Image (cartoon, rainbow, N blue to C red; front, top):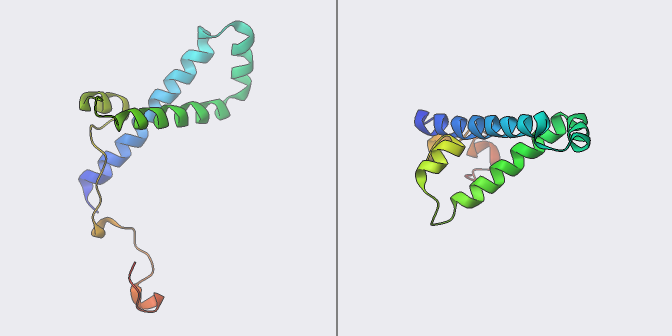
Length: 104
């Protein structure tokens, strides 16, 4: 496996999770009115997963725009580029001989 692509993919997973966690903490720590904050805290991990997912989806959507600067991807996603994989980077799976001689 290409180590550079692997490390890029790990960073682009860990950094959005950290941002999502920070946003969730900030929301439950007092940015919401008290009655909404109490409800948000009761959802706990569900809220965290939703915030991380929304954060990642929105940043990836913005990243696909031509006006989006690469440095902002590095800050918000951990790397300025999307990892690229080659055929050798594929996970081991059934051999083509095991699948009737057909390739992937």
